[in-house]
Image (cartoon, rainbow, N blue to C red; front, top):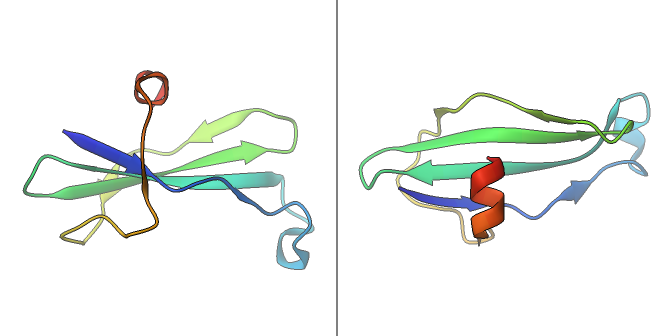
Length: 77
């Protein structure tokens, strides 16, 4: 399995997110060489983290802005 993720996108100061409990998010993507899956990670304003289940990503490659994960991040994911 190969896993990559986006950098954190901070939304606290963005007007569209003003009433949201979310302060940042990032997207994880994983492949087994044939299929790709993705999941969203939400950093809430209370500093808790919500990690969604893996879903089909409907793609055939990693987007160019996705970054390799550290071994510590992979354990947490």
